[in-house]
Length: 420
Image (cartoon, rainbow, N blue to C red; front, side, top):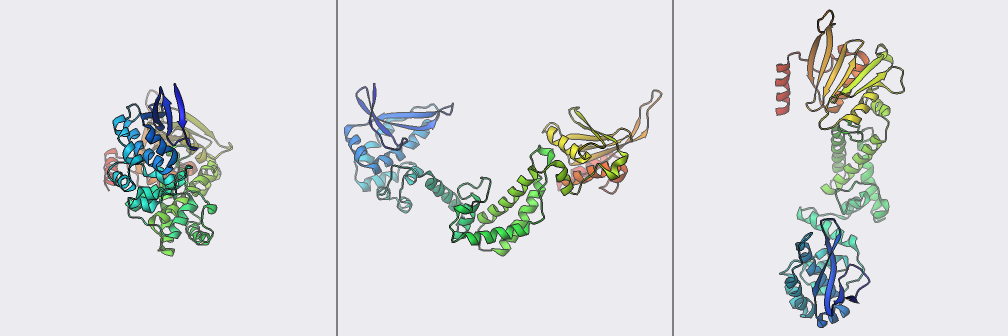
């Protein structure tokens, strides 16, 4: 038989129950192997209950000290009852100075106390009892998150000024640097907002006209890392030059915002528009001589493109790559069967091969092909090569890179490049 003897308005603060005639403190903490909350209980006395009822500060201090024991129990271990019971008298019944001394020796959950209104400066000085004089039953989790965020910054030597903090709040990254940034002007002190907007304007002017394209090699929604790095470096340099007082965290969050917005725009742009913005629109006009192209991947899947269809050849090819590319599928081919030529893209090696038919097979003989290799400089290099091939076939690739017919020579060149 279990009866609730005492509880507070916040359901997470430990309750007192009576189970089979015995008083116990019960609290939820941690999770089991199935991610369900765990519940821990341990015995207390009437004297402890009296303090818990009347003294919110002591109640919260006890909770803070018991939580590390719950964490130590893990997903399936038992609470160390002896250690939990040993905390009762020193925390609930001792003089404030003795409680302060105890908290210098034991682990305790600082964030829990801060969320319930503890004075941070007093906590930092070890005066835990005095710090809890204004404690509240209601919890403010954001206050604890901000405290931990500031501690993480302090541990790596980052000290925020008012404008730095305002910029991080504007992008939503004050608490978590890994959060995708967005524009949140309402989160900023109105007195600082004009200064924040001047920094943002500097970044926008620096990257005006720049873009981040999609990278189909890494999936349909992936974006080009080189474009991202280029934009980030440009924004970073401009903001540092115009606002040298800003710390690294503030500068990085601004460049992250610009890059994230550009990447989101790229993901929502149709592939045809993406190709045109990259300067690679092809498939009509100059490529009129090409009526059919065949796209294949390393798994034997094939897709045909026909002249006069609704999409350009390059857009259709890169869409095919985005759909099919994977860690075990990094070789893609474009073939013009009518002209007897094609290109093979090796994404795993940043290289390409162009294949042309020298002699058609016949009368029992196999066709003869000429295969030439070239190194490729990232996604931009691949885009240029694909567009050039679609416009003018293998002959148009002469001006793009250095082509080697000897495979051993090519492998040496590739190893030399990778060693740099």
